[in-house]
Image (spheres, rainbow, N blue to C red):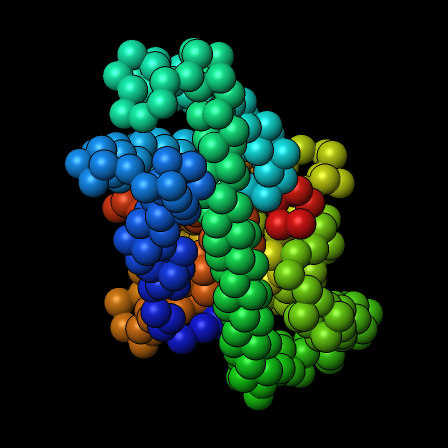
Length: 360
């Protein structure tokens, strides 16, 4: 089978653990440090003030800093979940900045009012108190924002490296399986057997058969390292592959295309359609009494490969490795899931449409 892979670990679970927000120690250490800095910037603390007032101010600063930190943290996390993609970074930062600005103004008004009406030191007029709190709020939120944004972008960078390594591994597995299965005596044996039978009966058709076989191998060599290719290119390869199989099965194998004329913008992962067609042939009866019908269509935002179900009762054991490889690579490249539906009469696999913006 082309492009199959062994059973892989749950990469998405690993990625979720790697990218989870673990800021416990940043909060445990950061909040007291900021409170100390605020205390040192207070003139009355430097000059010396009543210890009861000092303790009250420290407690009050703790409440303020925790409130600022947790509210800001909520805004950051909400915006990241709302706009998770890198292409939405500008939009996320703009809305996040607006939300934080409104929060700062509201929090500054509340704190300035509390300090003005319930002073614990020398009383200032409300505007002076407001501007003083606003200045400290901007510094505080600036520190928190820098910490979280740096952690966020470092995490995305680390995750990108991790995903890149996963993709390389998937491609290596796929290429290995191509060498093990496609360019192997098994596939060549079947093709040559069909050719041996064909040569004495129809020399012209034999030449065409050799040309199609050459096209299959050329496609494997040209595209086995690609992440995605045009759907039109994949369909040309699939036509050659189906032609070779029809030399064995004749009209007992029927592949029907139900695709729109304009396929220029649609891409697929190389060999996915071939793998699905080969799976259908490999695991189902193909005979005059039970012809195999495979339909390849575009339904909504999916390319659907569907076949009537007439499972072979012996001789072939399904490992689902080829299908698992396709699923892993689609989720890795596009974060979209491949849908598999099986019932008593049919088996279908829906491949999400891929565009340049999905994987750039």
